Amino acid sequence: MSRTVTFGNEEEGPFYIQHIHRSGSFERTQHMHDMYELYYLYEGERMYFIRDRSYLILPGDLVLINRRELHATSDSGNVGHARVVINFDDSFVAKSKEDAPFLLDAFAHASPVLRLDLPTRRLVEDILGKLIHEAKEPQLGQTFALRQYLTELLLFTARFILLHPVTSPEHVSPLHRKISTIVRFINTHYPEPLRLEELAEQFEISPAYLSRMFKEITGFSLIEYVNLVRVQEAQRLLTTTKLKVILIAEQVGFGSLVQFGRVFRQMTKMTPLRYRQSAVT
Image (cartoon, rainbow, N blue to C red):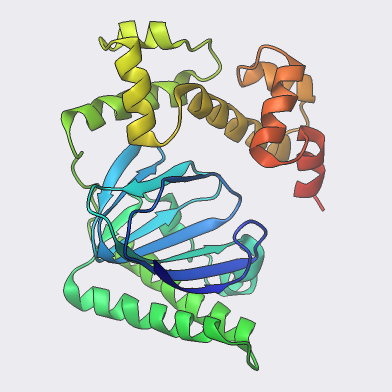
């Protein structure tokens, strides 16, 4: 059972917000999208895999996820939670960034998790409360107000990382640390052939156990994660270079252009060429 306030389209942008209170278990969700994401937990606990490791998210944690950053959420073992998630693209904050180019600095910070003390939580929850209230019903100046309140929240994050030493929370367990090490290895060696058996041997873990624990901790199967990292790099090359698609496919580790095209379409819902064209229009 859940109570929800939702505004916008999660997949298409330019702005989406959802505030939800769930009383029961909620299945893991995985994402990689072109929008920035802010996630704030009011109640409960969640496991969050971001970038190259998993985090136990607690009440008062504000999570910032950059564009095209792999992330997944799941139950921590304690069911029930209340959270707000916000997705937005560059166009939604373009005018604000002209006056304040530092607004998105926190998304590139070493730690994606800002652990807030009680007074700071009240400040953030006040801003989120204004966003949620504005999102409930269509009214005069709704989009303008949502943009203003989002800008206020982004300004808070930029100031917070500037004024506070933000360190990553400890790993949940030694196994989580080991899986994080394997993830970082994949993130560096994705252009090479990466086989389950060879990774298991290198990191001294059985193939079956590695396969099961990798999925449980990250939310992705091993091959799914490898393909996502390769597609993520292909997206960058498609939008920042003029390399031919076949060369990009080779550089990111796909064995053939056909395989690259099939996997890319599965992940992004468009062909590589269409993705390149959409980035410049």
